[in-house]
Image (cartoon, rainbow, N blue to C red; front, top):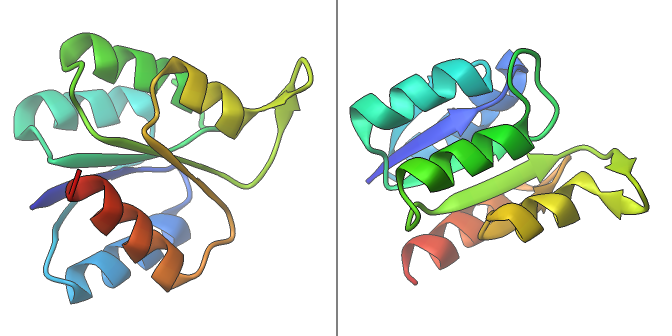
Length: 121
């Protein structure tokens, strides 16, 4: 199974990559939504994990674009916080198409349970 991690924070990508690779997943990475979409189109991953706050193309727009390419894509949104108009970015992400959300910082077990739960649906 291929998982694409989109996050501008290299440490977050590395941490997620290490956790997921230990479980046998193939991991792809992108540092922003624009490059993430290119990887998504080319590699067709089984799951996308995207941050919400990134330069160039933020997470909400990235989720919308992924949904336009593949309405059945499995997407996890993650964020360390932030909100707009009385709604958190993670709530907004769910409204526009994220299947699951993760609040940073998260434990390795939380990441794995969320990934496995979504891939098994």
